[in-house]
Image (tube, rainbow, N blue to C red):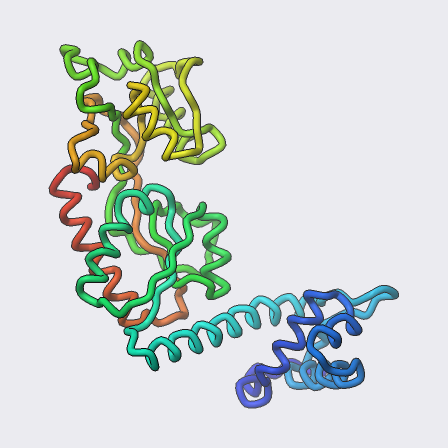
Length: 317
C-alpha cells in the first residue's frame, strides 16, 4: 500500500474513523465488533477498507489482540479530534434550533479561573444571553491535550514557553504579577517601612512546591535572599488559602488575580512589599488550524474589557 494524502477527504468516511477508534480502545477485533454492534467479519472488512483508503497498515495483529502502528497512532490522534468536532457541531446545531447563540468550552488555569473568567463570563452573558458555556479548571499539562482533541475551544491563563514547535497559538493579553496580600485589618499594615526581609516574621500561606507557581515563588524569594520559613503553610487549595487569610490572619503570596474579588471588595489588601519575578505573561491558547467562532471572539472581547478594569486597579499588568 502507498500513502496518498490527497485522496483522504474523498475516500475516508466517518464510520471508518469510528471503527479505528473502537479497535484501538478495545485492542481486540472481537471486542470492538461487539461494542459497535457489528459482526467481526464486517469490522475486519471495514478496517481493510480504511487501510486501503489511507494507504497504510494501521494495526499490527498480535497473538492476543492488536496494537496501532506508527501510521495508526497518527490517524487515531486526528480521528479523536474530528469526531469530537462533529459531536460539538451537533450540540451547537441543536442549541441553534432551540434559539441559543452557540457554545464555548473553556479550560482555565487557577488564577484566571478565580479572578478573570467569572467576571468576563458575566459580561459575555449580558451581551450574548443565549450563549452556552462549559468550564474546566486544570493545569496546563492537562488542558493542552484536551484542546488538541477538540474537547475545549480555548485555554485561559498563564502562558509558558513551549518546549518546541507545537500546534497551539498563544496570545498574550496581560501580565500576572505576584503580590503579598493580607486581610484588610491585619497588623502588617501598621508596620513602618516593611521590606521583603520582614516577611518571615509573619505567618505565611504559600502555594505548594508541587505546583509550578510554588516553585517559581521559592526561586523568587531565594533570589532576593529571603529564606522560606519552615512554618509556612503550603497548599494547592485556593479556597483553603483564602480562609486562612480571612480567618487565620496569615499573609499569602500569590498572583493578585487569584484574590481579585477580595481585593475589589476591600476585604483583602496588597501589602506594600515588592516580589521581584521574571515577566509572567498570561492570555489565551487556541489551536493554530482551528478558526475562531464569533462566540469565542465575543468571549475574548469580554476578557479584554474585564482586564482593562483590573489593570486600572493594579491587579494585572
